[in-house]
Image (cartoon, rainbow, N blue to C red):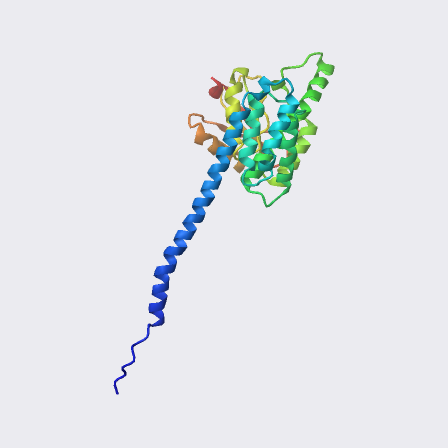
Length: 285
């Protein structure tokens, strides 16, 4: 007997039809979501840029620095508490402080940034980028906070103090306690930077900013010496790999530098995951 009933659509044919309709729809929806997300990020960046432009030079126009800092803080506070905006906003605040020569730890803005950064360091769910940024903020805040006391002690001991950039503040017990705590909390390696001549100061700051993307790099210190070749010094055998990683990272930006790597010896116990970068005249000249 011939079956005159029309043949039904097979399950494979149904799946094929659904796939041909559903996949383009899903791609479209995903693309729209990405577009909205990108547009939102771009708008946030434009807003932060607009705020930056409106605040540039504000301190120069006003006598009351505190009021200006509070104004800036009120603008950036929400972004500092937004994990997606923390790194970019911290960079904005740091640039604002540098542009207006606010380098003391008494700054309301600097203290607020440091306080927020400590929260980020304690939060292990934060992104590695945020924790590196936060670690550097706190490290340099601690150096600034202990600088006045270091200068006072040196004046009492020697009768006169060196310029701030010659002060070995990063290696004082107070600062090292804080840096060791950051190191233990985050696992981010610390790179102490020393340089040979004051003429190299600005160039060394460039190196420091480059290193801050990967390491904790406290304020560089001017240690007068005639070292011709830059070198990396490590103190624990386990840090030889870290020293080589630092050398490779430096060579990415400064391929002309042939940095030596040496194991150094000291009577003091140096915590692991910490090395020194000595910038010689080969970089400074």
